[in-house]
Amino acid sequence: MNKPLAVIFSFCLLLSACVSTKYVEKQSPELSASVYAVQDSIWNGRFDLAEFYSAETTRLVVPPDSTKRIKIKPLISTEQ
Image 1 (spheres, rainbow, N blue to C red):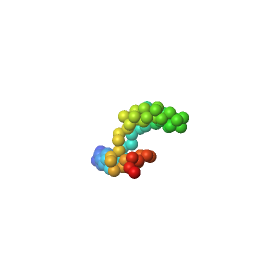
Image 2 (image 1 turned 90 degrees about the vertical axis):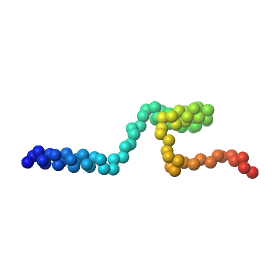
Image 3 (image 1 turned 135 degrees about the vertical axis):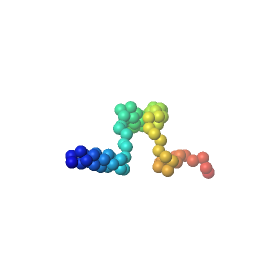
Image 4 (image 1 turned 180 degrees about the horizontal axis):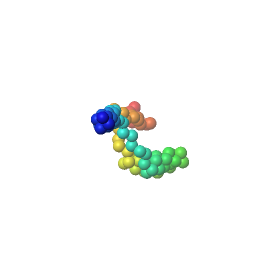
């Protein structure tokens, strides 16, 4: 009697683990350091360093799909 109950319980546990699981990647120390380096560079007016650190950050992160990417328009337009 206990063995069939254990099999049913194990099957239900396995089935519930497979339903709607969302994987969230753990934050890496390298990513955290790079993001804060960009912020500190911008706050201190070091845009040359901000450009370097942001390029390194994009190497660490998987890019979003095109529908979820934030569109940034240039500040100065060449159109007249």
